[in-house]
Amino acid sequence: MRRLGPYLKPFIPRMSLGFLVKVIGTVVELAIPWILSYIIDDLIPLGEINPVIVWGVLMILCSLCAWFGNIIANRMASAVARDFTRKLRHDLFEKISYLSERSVDNITIPSLISRVTSDTYVMHQTVGMMQRLGVRAPILLVGGIIVTLTLDPVLTLIMVATLPFVAIITFVVSRKGARLFKIVQSGSDSLLRVVRENAVGVRVIKALSKSDYERERFKKVNDDLTERERTAEKTMAIINPVMSLLLNLGIVAVIVAGAYRVQGGQTEVGKIIAFMNLFTIVLNALLAINRMFTMLSRASASSARIFEVLETPIELYETEPHFSFIPENAPHIAFKNVTFKYDKGSFAVKNLNFELKRGETLGIIGATGAGKSTIIRALMRYYDVADGAIEIDGVDIRDYATPDLRAKFGVVFQNDALFKDTIRENIRLGRELSDDDLTEAAKQAQALEFINAQGGFDGEVAIKGANLSGGQKQRLLVARALAGEPEILILDDSSSALDYKTDSKLREQIRLNHADATKIIIAQRISSIMHAEKIIVMENGEVIGMGTHDELMASCELYREIGRSQIGGGIELGEATA
Ligand code: ADP
Image (cartoon, rainbow, N blue to C red; front, top):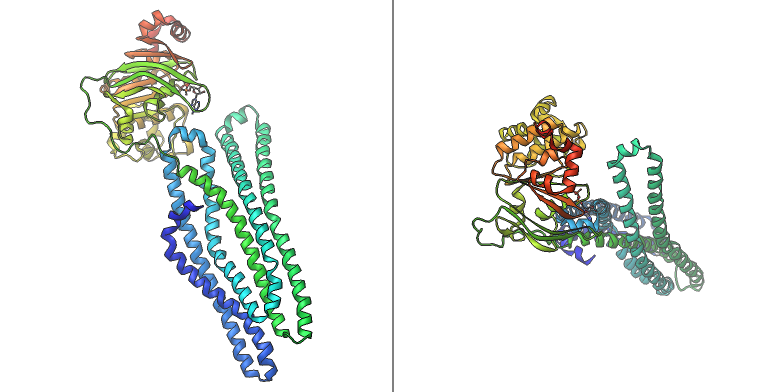
């Protein structure tokens, strides 16, 4: 919670003004029972109506003033809470977009989503509530006690005697609450994960008639979250009744003692009535403080989760380059003894060595899970390698400024994202590209025809490209990658949904128009990569064959097998790629 300081600092002037208004409103509110006691004990016995009316009107004015003050201060508090949360959410979102893949793997995407949404919402509520009640409740509590002291110190002491017990209970329970609310928030991560998986996999779930199974899975995490909420709330709920019990016992004691004191002439009836009034104010203040503690327990869990993200170092993001010159005659891309491991699981890519000259094409083939995409993730420095080095133009990729490094690539990942926007924006993706550039890229990607059928570049793409076929999506993504005229073009399984003819046309266009770009093509089909200058065959994270198509057909058993199964031993290769 301490770390919130810098976030709250810019709002101090606005909060102070709000506090001032609140303080005035609250103090005036405290004056009301005091005036009441004065009217009953001092003015009524005089038997004159005018002073009673004057002080009565003053009471009304005080209520109005307190009422207005409260409204204004609460509105200001809401505005501060809103702006504070906007800043927090903004920074969180920004940080997430720079997080390394390793950090994302560790925190997990559903948890990140829930931190941006649900945890920031908790902070929003807390900052609002702290301003609304954080000033008012302590003033009412302390002020209430002070006013009661002026009315009757003995009775006040009876009331105050209960407070230490209340404080101890609140403190102990809230500490426990903070721990429990952290568990609640992690339950909300699980809920989000299941909802997300369900939404993403809706087709397959329906196809396999797994709706019941999914419902059961959702019920489980939902019940689990409810149970965690219940435990946390039940713990926090102990405070309220205990507090009421203690304070009401205090009231009973005050009434009994008060009755004796009135009878003994040590105090007056008006004072007892004002006392009861103030007692209610003090009680409500304590209940409000209790609510604040509940909220603070929640906020401390949420704030820890938010700051865990905000304070995660972005170790893979270099803002400055760390090299002074680019060596001459270096290969465009070089993997030197690269070994790579993910944090989770045991998968590893070992001893990867290859070089690509500028303009060359590398094909990568292998079963799913063999580690093909992993090579790309390492090359683009989404993850750092464990051992060895990856170089571009003879410079270690760790020495490039990250934006410079990423600008070199045009890439289509497997299942890449299309956004709910126009076709134009989906290809352009915020870059400075003219419509001519986009048209050219779309043409090369064999996408122009269907784009025109979809209403041209202004045509809409639905969420995740739902209104496009698999092949159309792939071509749109390829157009996006080509449009930036990248230095290195990476196509990760991005033509699997294209028919052979379109796939071959696409490759020809790339060869003709992007001769200088170094290309890395990951494919399941041999025909997509067979013309590459270099082909890597991967199995379980290891390179089991490297060379040209002919070399591999001669030397690599797995490659030969794939070749045979796909294109009949190479006899019809010409046809397949025509
Ligand atoms: P391919 O592209 O060949 O289908 P990948 O390179 O995507 O395969 O994945 C290779 C293996 O790496 C997979 O079997 C998977 O178990 C593992 N893997 C991929 N991504 C991660 C990750 N973020 N964390 C842990 N393991 C991963």
